[in-house]
Image (cartoon, rainbow, N blue to C red):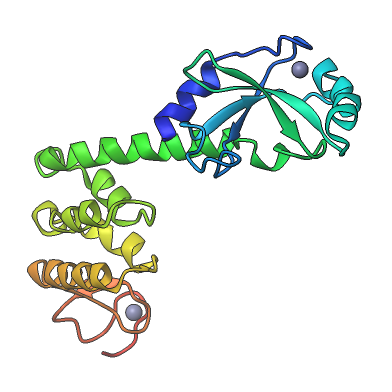
Length: 216
Ligand SMILES: [Zn+2]
Ligand SMILES: [Zn+2]
């Protein structure tokens, strides 16, 4: 859906009635009557209140049907179909405008995630803790990718991963447990522990913390 929406954003559609650019909107959940939908999650709609189709529509609908309403020009993306869509007022569809910035953010995140997942295969050879951390600390990411990333914490053997992970709160408790187990093992492998007072890394044999000077 995301890639399709981004493709549509690059298309420029103009209203034949007013020559204004059409707006990309989320399709309403149902086509009036048939329940089959528009066959598209998106619709291009002329939301120009000065559009001649819209301004003249009020009188036409009043005369033809005796109720209040007008028309908006609408096109279905990827097809040549165009419609005069009946609307009850000028606010119709303004609430279903596609949020372009949110969509671009979402896409950027998706691309970054794909890149990090691809980088996992060679992350140990490349010392690529960054990709591993990106996935582990990405609450929008797929859980299976994040769990896979956790498995690289020990082979990477880089204790600089501890701080960012400790400062993060995980929504998934299973993932959190897996991460904690990996960190404990990583500390033990490096003969380190975390000071219970200041959380700095110290030798596991230390009797006094070299950072906060507290006795352990
Ligand atoms: Zn128009
Ligand atoms: Zn300390």
